Amino acid sequence: MVRHIVLWRLHEEAKRTAWSAQASCVGPLVRAMRAQVRGLLRLELALNQTDAADAADLLLFSEFESWDALRAYETHPLHDELRILIGALRSERRVLNYEPGLELSSEASSVGYSAPPDNKAGAGQEAVT
Image (cartoon, rainbow, N blue to C red):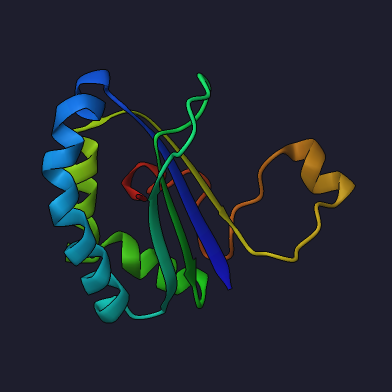
């Protein structure tokens, strides 16, 4: 299993006006992704519920059967729709992809990053939502 987590900060204007206009499109899009993206096991999209100054505004939490399923998601047309929709509203984006249960070895933690199997380090990272 592979987890794919994305945190976004939205532009201030988007928080006040644009997000509420886009929110009605997001629910059906997320439901369609759950039904149509092969290898997608879980997908949640949530708004932050606190006022912490350093908090992200929006979270995407997803689980995939494999690294191949995550790569297929990255090029899926529904993912492109979500990326375009949120991309116009965001000021910042952070992504984390990992396999749960794997412990960091002293070697991996000193390097800081280990590419998943069959993935070039850094390649395609900007395209992931």
